[in-house]
Amino acid sequence: MRSLSEIDTISKRALRAKGFSWGTSEEMGKSIKQLELFGLPGLKNLNQYLKIYDQNKFQQIKHVSKNNISENKFHCPISSGIGFLDQIKSLEKMNSVEFNKIAYPILFLSFVSRASEVLGKKILLKMDEKEFILNFNQSIFGNYHKNEIWENANNIFINFLDNNNSFSETEWKEMTKFANETFVDESDELKEKSAGAGLTDND
Image: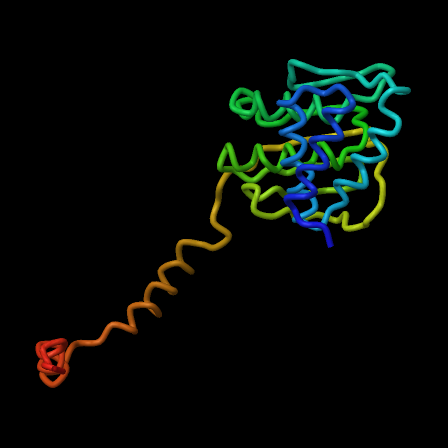
């Protein structure tokens, strides 16, 4: 089994060989390593993307807006992902962001996960019929777990989620009451033992 370090290194070197900048190659190396860590087929999809990269003129994007529409070409997942991550602070204020036509969307997914960590917020990502919850770049929950190539997604919706507890204030108070039961008043015997603790001469 290949190590995550090997995956990172081979990914960024392959991208650099294809003419991507070192900065972009470094970012993608991190992303592919992360996808593989989470059990998603990052390297498989990147490999196929690079095979067809020269023949397909994907739509490059530098400035991400609330609605990102390409009439003909599919958006490049790498430029879209890097743009999204770079602009995440301003994009958050829009509450949601949409794209159409992203090629190899698994590659884009990794940047959204990293953006969740930057914001300190969970992000809901819908790509066609597939949905993902990105949790601060610590985990990815979704209904896509296949080890296969995912060539494109036509409708992409990103929603920034508010940080809310999954429990009520009443439940918190009830748990606090349970927790407080672990604290008992010290008896005189316990106090005496505590007072002498550590004073025994073992020489």
